[in-house]
Length: 403
Length: 132
Image 1 (cartoon, rainbow over the protein chains, first blue to last red):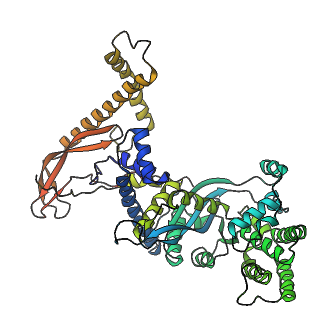
Image 2 (tube, rainbow over the protein chains, first blue to last red):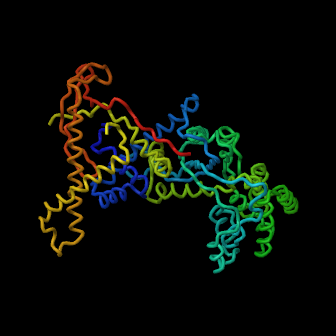
Image 3 (spheres, helix red, strand yellow):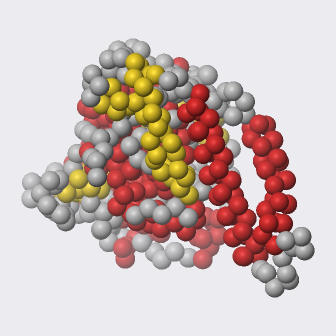
Protein backbone atom coordinates (compact mmCIF):
# COMPACT_ATOMS: atom_id res chain seq x y z
CA UNK A 1 0.00 0.00 0.00
CA UNK A 2 3.04 2.25 0.43
CA UNK A 3 1.55 3.57 3.62
CA UNK A 4 3.65 5.09 6.33
CA UNK A 5 2.96 5.43 10.02
CA UNK A 6 0.64 8.33 9.20
CA UNK A 7 -3.00 7.78 8.51
CA UNK A 8 -2.95 9.73 5.23
CA UNK A 9 -3.22 8.18 1.82
CA UNK A 10 -0.22 8.99 -0.44
CA UNK A 11 -2.35 11.31 -2.61
CA UNK A 12 -3.56 13.29 0.39
CA UNK A 13 -0.06 13.47 1.84
CA UNK A 14 1.24 14.75 -1.49
CA UNK A 15 -1.35 17.51 -1.55
CA UNK A 16 -0.75 18.51 2.06
CA UNK A 17 3.01 18.73 1.60
CA UNK A 18 2.55 20.66 -1.65
CA UNK A 19 0.39 23.18 0.19
CA UNK A 20 3.01 23.34 2.95
CA UNK A 21 5.68 24.14 0.39
CA UNK A 22 3.59 26.59 -1.63
CA UNK A 23 1.95 28.76 0.99
CA UNK A 24 3.89 31.13 3.25
CA UNK A 25 3.37 29.06 6.40
CA UNK A 26 2.21 25.65 7.57
CA UNK A 27 -0.62 27.32 9.47
CA UNK A 28 -1.92 28.91 6.27
CA UNK A 29 -1.52 25.63 4.41
CA UNK A 30 -3.61 23.85 7.06
CA UNK A 31 -6.28 26.53 6.77
CA UNK A 32 -6.26 26.23 2.98
CA UNK A 33 -6.59 22.44 3.20
CA UNK A 34 -9.55 22.81 5.53
CA UNK A 35 -11.28 25.45 3.45
CA UNK A 36 -10.67 24.09 -0.02
CA UNK A 37 -10.77 20.34 0.55
CA UNK A 38 -12.36 19.90 3.98
CA UNK A 39 -9.20 18.27 5.31
CA UNK A 40 -8.89 18.86 9.02
CA UNK A 41 -5.26 19.11 10.08
CA UNK A 42 -3.48 21.47 12.46
CA UNK A 43 -0.64 23.67 11.26
CA UNK A 44 1.88 22.12 13.62
CA UNK A 45 1.14 18.65 12.33
CA UNK A 46 1.37 19.77 8.73
CA UNK A 47 4.70 21.39 9.53
CA UNK A 48 5.97 18.07 10.87
CA UNK A 49 4.86 16.31 7.68
CA UNK A 50 6.68 18.90 5.58
CA UNK A 51 9.74 18.49 7.77
CA UNK A 52 9.74 14.70 7.41
CA UNK A 53 9.40 14.87 3.64
CA UNK A 54 12.05 17.60 3.42
CA UNK A 55 14.56 15.54 5.37
CA UNK A 56 13.91 12.57 3.10
CA UNK A 57 14.23 14.71 -0.02
CA UNK A 58 17.59 15.96 1.26
CA UNK A 59 18.68 12.35 1.76
CA UNK A 60 17.71 11.46 -1.81
CA UNK A 61 19.46 14.56 -3.14
CA UNK A 62 22.65 13.65 -1.28
CA UNK A 63 22.35 10.07 -2.51
CA UNK A 64 22.18 11.42 -6.06
CA UNK A 65 25.44 13.31 -5.50
CA UNK A 66 27.08 10.11 -4.22
CA UNK A 67 25.88 8.24 -7.31
CA UNK A 68 27.33 10.95 -9.52
CA UNK A 69 30.69 10.66 -7.75
CA UNK A 70 30.63 6.90 -8.30
CA UNK A 71 29.66 7.48 -11.95
CA UNK A 72 26.45 5.49 -11.57
CA UNK A 73 23.99 8.35 -11.91
CA UNK A 74 21.89 7.96 -15.05
CA UNK A 75 20.09 10.87 -16.72
CA UNK A 76 16.32 10.80 -16.48
CA UNK A 77 15.72 12.71 -19.69
CA UNK A 78 15.43 11.22 -23.14
CA UNK A 79 17.71 13.76 -24.81
CA UNK A 80 20.05 16.58 -23.87
CA UNK A 81 18.49 20.06 -24.10
CA UNK A 82 19.58 22.46 -26.88
CA UNK A 83 20.77 25.00 -24.30
CA UNK A 84 21.59 24.24 -20.67
CA UNK A 85 21.76 27.14 -18.24
CA UNK A 86 22.91 26.96 -14.63
CA UNK A 87 22.64 30.05 -12.45
CA UNK A 88 23.71 30.20 -8.80
CA UNK A 89 22.89 32.76 -6.15
CA UNK A 90 22.38 32.99 -2.42
CA UNK A 91 19.61 34.12 -0.13
CA UNK A 92 19.16 34.37 3.59
CA UNK A 93 16.84 32.89 6.16
CA UNK A 94 16.48 33.07 9.92
CA UNK A 95 17.78 30.17 11.99
CA UNK A 96 17.64 29.29 15.67
CA UNK A 97 19.51 26.94 17.92
CA UNK A 98 17.66 23.63 18.19
CA UNK A 99 17.15 21.67 21.40
CA UNK A 100 17.34 24.57 23.84
CA UNK A 101 13.71 25.01 24.70
CA UNK A 102 10.72 26.59 23.01
CA UNK A 103 10.88 29.91 21.21
CA UNK A 104 13.58 31.47 19.11
CA UNK A 105 16.91 30.85 20.83
CA UNK A 106 20.18 32.32 19.57
CA UNK A 107 18.72 33.62 16.30
CA UNK A 108 21.12 33.97 13.39
CA UNK A 109 20.52 34.82 9.74
CA UNK A 110 22.27 32.24 7.59
CA UNK A 111 22.97 32.11 3.89
CA UNK A 112 21.31 29.53 1.71
CA UNK A 113 22.53 28.69 -1.76
CA UNK A 114 20.19 28.26 -4.65
CA UNK A 115 20.91 26.90 -8.11
CA UNK A 116 18.60 27.38 -11.03
CA UNK A 117 18.85 24.85 -13.85
CA UNK A 118 17.01 25.66 -17.03
CA UNK A 119 16.74 23.89 -20.34
CA UNK A 120 15.82 26.21 -23.16
CA UNK A 121 15.73 26.78 -26.87
CA UNK A 122 17.43 29.85 -28.26
CA UNK A 123 18.54 30.87 -31.73
CA UNK A 124 22.17 31.57 -32.53
CA UNK A 125 23.17 34.64 -34.55
CA UNK A 126 26.02 35.50 -36.88
CA UNK A 127 26.14 39.05 -35.47
CA UNK A 128 25.30 40.48 -32.10
CA UNK A 129 21.47 40.55 -32.13
CA UNK A 130 21.28 43.39 -29.62
CA UNK A 131 24.33 45.67 -29.80
CA UNK A 132 22.49 48.52 -28.11
CA UNK A 133 21.78 48.12 -24.38
CA UNK A 134 18.10 47.49 -23.61
CA UNK A 135 15.97 50.49 -22.54
CA UNK A 136 15.75 49.19 -18.96
CA UNK A 137 19.49 49.80 -18.49
CA UNK A 138 19.18 53.32 -19.88
CA UNK A 139 16.33 54.34 -17.62
CA UNK A 140 17.89 56.44 -14.88
CA UNK A 141 15.26 56.07 -12.11
CA UNK A 142 15.01 52.37 -12.74
CA UNK A 143 18.77 51.84 -12.70
CA UNK A 144 19.11 53.93 -9.54
CA UNK A 145 16.45 51.81 -7.83
CA UNK A 146 18.15 48.63 -8.96
CA UNK A 147 21.52 49.77 -7.60
CA UNK A 148 19.96 50.70 -4.26
CA UNK A 149 18.44 47.23 -4.03
CA UNK A 150 21.61 45.34 -4.88
CA UNK A 151 24.30 47.59 -3.41
CA UNK A 152 22.52 49.36 -0.59
CA UNK A 153 25.71 50.30 1.28
CA UNK A 154 27.53 51.97 -1.58
CA UNK A 155 24.67 53.19 -3.75
CA UNK A 156 24.54 56.96 -4.34
CA UNK A 157 21.94 58.70 -2.14
CA UNK A 158 18.35 58.43 -3.41
CA UNK A 159 18.09 62.16 -4.22
CA UNK A 160 20.82 61.73 -6.86
CA UNK A 161 18.40 60.00 -9.22
CA UNK A 162 15.55 61.84 -10.94
CA UNK A 163 11.96 60.91 -10.14
CA UNK A 164 10.41 58.43 -12.57
CA UNK A 165 8.41 60.28 -15.20
CA UNK A 166 5.17 59.09 -16.76
CA UNK A 167 6.88 58.29 -20.05
CA UNK A 168 9.21 55.89 -18.25
CA UNK A 169 6.26 53.71 -17.35
CA UNK A 170 5.16 53.76 -20.96
CA UNK A 171 8.65 52.80 -22.15
CA UNK A 172 8.71 49.80 -19.80
CA UNK A 173 5.41 48.48 -21.03
CA UNK A 174 6.44 48.56 -24.71
CA UNK A 175 8.42 45.48 -25.74
CA UNK A 176 11.92 46.55 -26.76
CA UNK A 177 13.06 46.04 -30.32
CA UNK A 178 15.40 43.15 -30.08
CA UNK A 179 15.81 39.49 -30.71
CA UNK A 180 13.11 37.01 -29.85
CA UNK A 181 13.48 35.87 -26.26
CA UNK A 182 14.61 32.29 -25.66
CA UNK A 183 11.96 29.64 -25.11
CA UNK A 184 12.09 28.25 -21.62
CA UNK A 185 11.59 24.50 -21.39
CA UNK A 186 11.98 23.05 -17.90
CA UNK A 187 13.22 24.65 -14.72
CA UNK A 188 14.48 22.71 -11.72
CA UNK A 189 16.34 23.96 -8.70
CA UNK A 190 18.68 22.87 -5.94
CA UNK A 191 18.80 24.60 -2.58
CA UNK A 192 20.91 24.03 0.47
CA UNK A 193 22.35 25.58 3.59
CA UNK A 194 25.67 23.80 2.94
CA UNK A 195 28.83 25.58 1.89
CA UNK A 196 29.99 25.71 -1.71
CA UNK A 197 32.22 22.64 -1.34
CA UNK A 198 29.16 20.54 -0.59
CA UNK A 199 26.76 22.51 -2.76
CA UNK A 200 28.76 22.11 -5.98
CA UNK A 201 28.37 18.30 -6.21
CA UNK A 202 24.65 18.61 -5.50
CA UNK A 203 24.20 20.99 -8.44
CA UNK A 204 26.41 18.87 -10.66
CA UNK A 205 24.34 15.77 -9.84
CA UNK A 206 21.12 17.57 -10.72
CA UNK A 207 22.70 18.78 -13.98
CA UNK A 208 23.77 15.24 -14.79
CA UNK A 209 20.28 13.81 -14.30
CA UNK A 210 19.08 16.38 -16.82
CA UNK A 211 21.88 15.58 -19.31
CA UNK A 212 23.14 19.17 -19.13
CA UNK A 213 26.70 18.02 -19.73
CA UNK A 214 25.69 16.70 -23.17
CA UNK A 215 23.97 19.94 -24.24
CA UNK A 216 25.53 21.61 -27.30
CA UNK A 217 25.43 25.03 -25.63
CA UNK A 218 26.02 25.49 -21.91
CA UNK A 219 26.11 28.55 -19.70
CA UNK A 220 26.90 29.15 -16.05
CA UNK A 221 25.79 32.57 -14.83
CA UNK A 222 26.67 34.06 -11.48
CA UNK A 223 27.32 37.34 -9.74
CA UNK A 224 30.81 38.21 -8.64
CA UNK A 225 30.86 35.89 -5.63
CA UNK A 226 34.04 33.87 -5.72
CA UNK A 227 32.34 30.64 -4.68
CA UNK A 228 30.21 30.72 -7.85
CA UNK A 229 33.30 30.52 -10.00
CA UNK A 230 34.83 27.87 -7.74
CA UNK A 231 31.75 25.72 -8.43
CA UNK A 232 31.93 26.55 -12.13
CA UNK A 233 35.62 25.65 -12.42
CA UNK A 234 35.27 22.45 -10.41
CA UNK A 235 32.00 21.04 -11.76
CA UNK A 236 31.06 22.96 -14.90
CA UNK A 237 34.42 23.65 -16.54
CA UNK A 238 33.05 23.42 -20.09
CA UNK A 239 30.14 25.74 -19.42
CA UNK A 240 30.46 29.32 -20.64
CA UNK A 241 31.10 31.33 -17.45
CA UNK A 242 29.09 34.56 -17.59
CA UNK A 243 29.22 37.40 -15.06
CA UNK A 244 25.75 38.77 -14.40
CA UNK A 245 25.45 42.06 -16.29
CA UNK A 246 23.16 43.59 -13.64
CA UNK A 247 25.95 43.41 -11.06
CA UNK A 248 28.39 44.89 -13.56
CA UNK A 249 25.92 47.70 -14.15
CA UNK A 250 25.72 48.42 -10.41
CA UNK A 251 29.48 48.72 -10.09
CA UNK A 252 29.62 51.01 -13.11
CA UNK A 253 26.85 53.20 -11.73
CA UNK A 254 28.58 53.70 -8.37
CA UNK A 255 31.98 54.23 -10.01
CA UNK A 256 30.49 56.81 -12.38
CA UNK A 257 29.01 58.63 -9.37
CA UNK A 258 32.41 58.54 -7.67
CA UNK A 259 34.09 60.34 -10.57
CA UNK A 260 31.16 62.54 -11.64
CA UNK A 261 28.97 63.46 -8.64
CA UNK A 262 26.85 65.90 -10.64
CA UNK A 263 23.66 64.10 -11.80
CA UNK A 264 23.80 64.70 -15.56
CA UNK A 265 27.52 64.02 -15.86
CA UNK A 266 27.14 60.94 -13.62
CA UNK A 267 24.47 59.49 -15.87
CA UNK A 268 26.45 60.28 -19.02
CA UNK A 269 29.54 58.60 -17.60
CA UNK A 270 27.49 55.57 -16.51
CA UNK A 271 25.86 55.22 -19.95
CA UNK A 272 29.24 55.42 -21.66
CA UNK A 273 30.82 52.72 -19.48
CA UNK A 274 27.71 50.55 -19.42
CA UNK A 275 27.44 50.63 -23.22
CA UNK A 276 31.14 49.78 -23.52
CA UNK A 277 30.73 46.74 -21.26
CA UNK A 278 27.52 45.69 -23.00
CA UNK A 279 29.44 45.77 -26.29
CA UNK A 280 32.34 43.77 -24.88
CA UNK A 281 34.78 46.66 -24.51
CA UNK A 282 35.53 45.97 -20.86
CA UNK A 283 39.25 46.63 -21.27
CA UNK A 284 38.52 50.27 -22.21
CA UNK A 285 36.51 50.77 -19.03
CA UNK A 286 39.21 49.13 -16.93
CA UNK A 287 41.82 51.46 -18.44
CA UNK A 288 39.68 54.53 -17.75
CA UNK A 289 38.97 53.46 -14.19
CA UNK A 290 42.66 52.77 -13.60
CA UNK A 291 43.41 56.32 -14.75
CA UNK A 292 40.80 57.66 -12.36
CA UNK A 293 42.36 55.62 -9.57
CA UNK A 294 45.78 57.08 -10.33
CA UNK A 295 44.27 60.55 -10.29
CA UNK A 296 42.35 60.14 -7.00
CA UNK A 297 44.69 57.72 -5.26
CA UNK A 298 44.04 54.42 -3.52
CA UNK A 299 41.60 54.33 -0.59
CA UNK A 300 43.06 54.34 2.90
CA UNK A 301 42.13 51.37 5.14
CA UNK A 302 39.68 53.52 7.10
CA UNK A 303 37.86 54.79 3.98
CA UNK A 304 34.06 55.05 4.15
CA UNK A 305 32.02 52.71 1.92
CA UNK A 306 30.97 55.67 -0.24
CA UNK A 307 34.45 57.20 -0.48
CA UNK A 308 35.03 57.75 -4.24
CA UNK A 309 38.46 56.09 -4.01
CA UNK A 310 36.86 53.07 -2.37
CA UNK A 311 34.12 52.86 -5.01
CA UNK A 312 36.62 53.05 -7.85
CA UNK A 313 38.83 50.45 -6.24
CA UNK A 314 35.87 48.06 -5.80
CA UNK A 315 34.63 48.53 -9.34
CA UNK A 316 38.09 48.13 -10.80
CA UNK A 317 38.70 44.94 -8.85
CA UNK A 318 35.32 43.55 -9.88
CA UNK A 319 35.86 44.30 -13.55
CA UNK A 320 39.43 42.97 -13.58
CA UNK A 321 38.38 39.75 -11.83
CA UNK A 322 35.40 39.16 -14.08
CA UNK A 323 36.65 40.51 -17.42
CA UNK A 324 37.09 37.00 -18.91
CA UNK A 325 33.41 36.37 -18.16
CA UNK A 326 32.14 39.57 -19.76
CA UNK A 327 32.23 38.83 -23.48
CA UNK A 328 28.55 39.73 -23.77
CA UNK A 329 28.29 40.14 -27.57
CA UNK A 330 29.49 36.54 -28.00
CA UNK A 331 27.07 35.24 -25.38
CA UNK A 332 24.20 36.99 -27.17
CA UNK A 333 25.28 35.53 -30.50
CA UNK A 334 25.18 32.08 -28.90
CA UNK A 335 21.72 32.75 -27.48
CA UNK A 336 22.94 32.57 -23.88
CA UNK A 337 21.64 34.73 -21.02
CA UNK A 338 23.74 37.66 -19.82
CA UNK A 339 22.00 38.31 -16.52
CA UNK A 340 21.24 36.12 -13.54
CA UNK A 341 17.73 37.54 -13.32
CA UNK A 342 16.19 34.05 -13.42
CA UNK A 343 17.96 32.89 -10.31
CA UNK A 344 17.37 36.25 -8.63
CA UNK A 345 13.64 35.72 -9.21
CA UNK A 346 13.94 32.19 -7.93
CA UNK A 347 15.60 33.42 -4.74
CA UNK A 348 12.61 35.74 -4.33
CA UNK A 349 10.27 32.76 -4.71
CA UNK A 350 12.21 30.87 -2.04
CA UNK A 351 12.14 33.89 0.23
CA UNK A 352 8.38 34.15 -0.11
CA UNK A 353 8.14 30.83 1.72
CA UNK A 354 11.17 30.69 4.00
CA UNK A 355 11.98 34.29 4.90
CA UNK A 356 10.14 36.58 7.29
CA UNK A 357 10.36 38.19 10.68
CA UNK A 358 8.31 35.33 12.16
CA UNK A 359 10.10 32.47 10.42
CA UNK A 360 12.94 30.72 12.19
CA UNK A 361 14.21 27.28 11.34
CA UNK A 362 16.31 24.95 13.41
CA UNK A 363 19.91 25.15 12.28
CA UNK A 364 20.83 22.00 10.44
CA UNK A 365 18.00 19.71 9.44
CA UNK A 366 15.15 22.21 9.98
CA UNK A 367 16.28 24.82 7.49
CA UNK A 368 17.54 22.19 5.06
CA UNK A 369 14.18 20.40 5.07
CA UNK A 370 12.01 23.39 4.21
CA UNK A 371 14.41 24.33 1.40
CA UNK A 372 14.03 20.85 -0.12
CA UNK A 373 10.25 20.97 -0.08
CA UNK A 374 10.25 24.47 -1.53
CA UNK A 375 12.73 23.41 -4.22
CA UNK A 376 10.55 20.40 -5.08
CA UNK A 377 7.46 22.57 -5.35
CA UNK A 378 9.22 25.15 -7.54
CA UNK A 379 10.86 22.59 -9.82
CA UNK A 380 8.87 21.96 -12.96
CA UNK A 381 9.74 18.27 -13.24
CA UNK A 382 6.98 16.95 -10.98
CA UNK A 383 9.61 16.11 -8.40
CA UNK A 384 7.27 15.99 -5.43
CA UNK A 385 4.71 13.82 -7.24
CA UNK A 386 7.52 11.51 -8.29
CA UNK A 387 8.78 11.34 -4.73
CA UNK A 388 5.40 10.17 -3.48
CA UNK A 389 5.01 7.78 -6.43
CA UNK A 390 8.34 6.22 -5.57
CA UNK A 391 7.82 5.98 -1.84
CA UNK A 392 8.20 2.40 -0.72
CA UNK A 393 6.19 2.97 2.44
CA UNK A 394 7.21 1.63 5.80
CA UNK A 395 7.21 -2.16 6.01
CA UNK A 396 7.04 -2.07 9.79
CA UNK A 397 4.31 -0.74 11.94
CA UNK A 398 4.60 1.31 15.05
CA UNK A 399 4.21 -0.65 18.25
CA UNK A 400 0.90 -0.02 19.90
CA UNK A 401 0.56 -0.30 23.65
CA UNK A 402 -2.44 -2.27 24.75
CA UNK A 403 -5.05 -0.18 26.52
CA UNK B 1 -6.97 -2.43 -15.57
CA UNK B 2 -4.33 -4.62 -14.04
CA UNK B 3 -1.55 -2.04 -14.25
CA UNK B 4 -0.42 0.23 -11.45
CA UNK B 5 -0.66 3.60 -13.25
CA UNK B 6 -4.13 4.06 -14.74
CA UNK B 7 -4.36 5.30 -18.31
CA UNK B 8 -6.14 8.61 -18.87
CA UNK B 9 -8.77 6.87 -21.00
CA UNK B 10 -9.50 4.37 -18.20
CA UNK B 11 -9.99 7.23 -15.77
CA UNK B 12 -12.27 9.04 -18.21
CA UNK B 13 -14.35 5.89 -18.68
CA UNK B 14 -14.80 5.56 -14.93
CA UNK B 15 -15.72 9.23 -14.69
CA UNK B 16 -18.36 8.83 -17.39
CA UNK B 17 -19.70 5.74 -15.67
CA UNK B 18 -19.90 7.43 -12.26
CA UNK B 19 -21.54 10.40 -13.91
CA UNK B 20 -24.61 8.25 -14.51
CA UNK B 21 -24.93 7.61 -10.78
CA UNK B 22 -25.68 11.29 -10.37
CA UNK B 23 -29.29 10.53 -11.33
CA UNK B 24 -29.57 8.00 -8.51
CA UNK B 25 -28.11 10.43 -5.99
CA UNK B 26 -30.43 13.19 -7.18
CA UNK B 27 -33.46 10.94 -6.83
CA UNK B 28 -32.37 9.79 -3.36
CA UNK B 29 -31.78 13.35 -2.20
CA UNK B 30 -34.84 15.11 -3.61
CA UNK B 31 -37.22 12.42 -4.84
CA UNK B 32 -38.53 11.98 -8.36
CA UNK B 33 -39.77 15.57 -8.54
CA UNK B 34 -36.30 16.98 -7.94
CA UNK B 35 -35.38 19.95 -5.75
CA UNK B 36 -37.85 22.76 -5.20
CA UNK B 37 -37.24 26.15 -6.70
CA UNK B 38 -36.25 27.49 -3.28
CA UNK B 39 -33.19 25.20 -3.08
CA UNK B 40 -30.07 27.08 -4.08
CA UNK B 41 -26.93 25.82 -5.78
CA UNK B 42 -24.95 25.93 -2.52
CA UNK B 43 -27.26 23.31 -1.02
CA UNK B 44 -27.25 21.20 -4.17
CA UNK B 45 -23.47 21.18 -4.21
CA UNK B 46 -23.37 20.01 -0.61
CA UNK B 47 -25.40 16.94 -1.59
CA UNK B 48 -23.15 16.31 -4.55
CA UNK B 49 -20.04 16.63 -2.40
CA UNK B 50 -21.42 14.23 0.18
CA UNK B 51 -22.15 11.75 -2.59
CA UNK B 52 -18.66 12.14 -4.06
CA UNK B 53 -17.06 11.65 -0.63
CA UNK B 54 -19.15 8.59 0.06
CA UNK B 55 -18.28 7.16 -3.32
CA UNK B 56 -14.58 7.76 -2.72
CA UNK B 57 -14.66 6.14 0.69
CA UNK B 58 -16.76 3.19 -0.46
CA UNK B 59 -14.60 2.55 -3.52
CA UNK B 60 -11.36 2.65 -1.56
CA UNK B 61 -12.77 0.42 1.20
CA UNK B 62 -13.88 -2.18 -1.35
CA UNK B 63 -10.67 -2.10 -3.37
CA UNK B 64 -8.49 -2.38 -0.30
CA UNK B 65 -10.58 -5.25 1.03
CA UNK B 66 -10.20 -7.07 -2.28
CA UNK B 67 -6.45 -6.55 -2.16
CA UNK B 68 -6.27 -7.80 1.43
CA UNK B 69 -8.24 -10.92 0.52
CA UNK B 70 -5.91 -11.61 -2.40
CA UNK B 71 -2.94 -11.94 -0.05
CA UNK B 72 -1.73 -15.47 0.80
CA UNK B 73 -2.28 -16.67 4.35
CA UNK B 74 1.37 -16.26 5.20
CA UNK B 75 3.92 -13.58 4.32
CA UNK B 76 7.71 -13.50 4.77
CA UNK B 77 9.16 -11.14 7.36
CA UNK B 78 11.17 -8.35 5.60
CA UNK B 79 14.08 -8.93 7.99
CA UNK B 80 14.38 -12.71 8.58
CA UNK B 81 12.11 -14.05 5.80
CA UNK B 82 10.30 -16.30 8.26
CA UNK B 83 6.72 -16.93 7.11
CA UNK B 84 4.16 -15.23 9.35
CA UNK B 85 0.41 -15.49 9.47
CA UNK B 86 -1.53 -12.59 8.00
CA UNK B 87 -4.19 -11.11 10.28
CA UNK B 88 -6.23 -7.96 9.96
CA UNK B 89 -6.43 -4.90 12.14
CA UNK B 90 -8.78 -1.99 11.80
CA UNK B 91 -7.15 1.31 10.96
CA UNK B 92 -8.64 4.63 9.92
CA UNK B 93 -7.17 6.23 6.82
CA UNK B 94 -7.63 9.83 5.69
CA UNK B 95 -8.13 10.43 2.00
CA UNK B 96 -9.28 13.44 -0.02
CA UNK B 97 -12.91 12.62 0.67
CA UNK B 98 -12.56 12.18 4.42
CA UNK B 99 -11.82 9.16 6.60
CA UNK B 100 -12.63 5.54 5.93
CA UNK B 101 -12.04 2.29 7.82
CA UNK B 102 -9.40 -0.05 6.53
CA UNK B 103 -8.92 -3.62 7.66
CA UNK B 104 -5.21 -3.64 7.26
CA UNK B 105 -3.36 -6.90 6.75
CA UNK B 106 -0.76 -7.20 9.50
CA UNK B 107 1.79 -9.86 10.30
CA UNK B 108 3.75 -10.46 13.47
CA UNK B 109 7.22 -11.99 13.30
CA UNK B 110 7.85 -13.82 16.55
CA UNK B 111 11.57 -14.14 15.75
CA UNK B 112 12.13 -10.41 15.19
CA UNK B 113 9.35 -9.49 17.64
CA UNK B 114 8.01 -6.93 15.19
CA UNK B 115 4.77 -6.29 13.37
CA UNK B 116 5.01 -5.63 9.67
CA UNK B 117 2.81 -4.87 6.69
CA UNK B 118 2.87 -7.25 3.77
CA UNK B 119 4.00 -4.49 1.45
CA UNK B 120 3.97 -4.28 -2.34
CA UNK B 121 6.61 -6.41 -4.00
CA UNK B 122 8.01 -3.66 -6.16
CA UNK B 123 8.85 -0.04 -5.48
CA UNK B 124 8.62 3.00 -7.70
CA UNK B 125 6.96 1.30 -10.63
CA UNK B 126 6.67 4.24 -13.00
CA UNK B 127 9.51 6.66 -12.92
CA UNK B 128 8.37 9.64 -14.98
CA UNK B 129 10.79 11.24 -17.36
CA UNK B 130 11.31 14.87 -18.16
CA UNK B 131 10.86 15.99 -21.72
CA UNK B 132 14.09 17.94 -21.72
